[in-house]
Length: 525
Image (cartoon, rainbow, N blue to C red):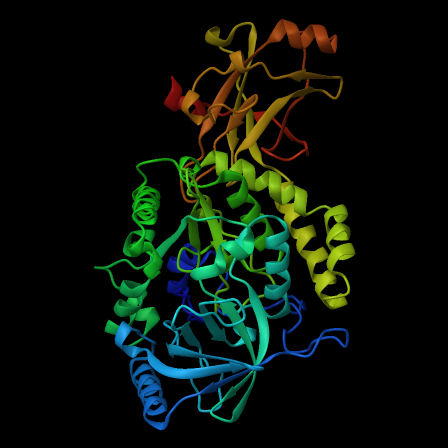
């Protein structure tokens, strides 16, 4: 699995934020934390946790020199590039269990490649054997994958039915040298699926090799690579859909057919030939997005990190979470670019985010996992919940304007409404002077039918695209109905507010309709 590393502090990094799954933040140590601390560190276990298993790697002198050559090359290029010929033989022992492996440095950034640092390693068990129930696994610096939060999140993802590459802590002894505590993460191979209740199927993803090769082309200068006006690295188009190279797939015609189907779906997502909600398992993907937002690890949604599982007989891809080595920041939020502009995904995400941000949900988790994780972790989760609740309940999710009467609008109140959030918004109705509430009849919509989310309950307006113009939808409310319900003089003065909420949530916000300006309606005359 290919992962992203530490970001440059340059604003050019923002061009890649959607690809990382992050929302509007730069590198760790660059932005102020507003006094908030990151999630508790993985390397400070509480007294109640069991002793860590010791993983011992032994390499012969010649092979270890080969690994040192990989490190030297990576430091010269300022990026770790990998190939199949980089794998080197070694023996790994845990307790009385010993297996032959092939290992190499893990593709990506060079963080941790100091002489005493925690080198990122990729290991593959040989002879169809397993170690700790895994055929492929990775060793990474725990601090770079999210610390205790990453461990806790994986427990919750499994509980919620979302596939995840299992994490555990180990103490690493490398050729007799104690390298300290590492995060051992399972790879997408062998018994990964069976261990999580899935039978058969394949996992595909995006190959980041071309991305890192282009970074290396700029001498490892990520800022320069991102600034390249000829080749834009900031989009999904520069990643190639690929299957994880499991030899079992090539030996099984059925698995090969499933792989072809899965790759076809992933390429359709990449080029946009089908809506994302027709490609992805909407409920699981939305649940995954809400949970990584809650736990402050939004980079898990990056296509550089995420795997996609296709079950037999199913035509939807499930997310398979993998822990990135991008250092978490306490205020990171999810970028909604990972919903691919699909309103069905966006509504499902909002619904799941509302569910996991309730105090009752946190109490439920604490009842199950409370003894395993520090109090500080639960306190930070409560803070994250509050952030999500505020995001789902914006002060003004819409703009609303009341048109001046014209011969065309005789007998109706014409109201212009625009969604200004990056999630779909449901228009519920109209509050008339605080005296009565008039529910919206979808038949009152005067124009801009394409702004409606199809097959949604009621009138739901599409999300506002960041950077695009404000798009208004006009509703003609029968004036006689308003006057009758509110017992008002239809020719008198009164105030009108539009009731709306982020679709998928249960809140309601009233936005006063402002007096109209002629320019606003000019396009529609």
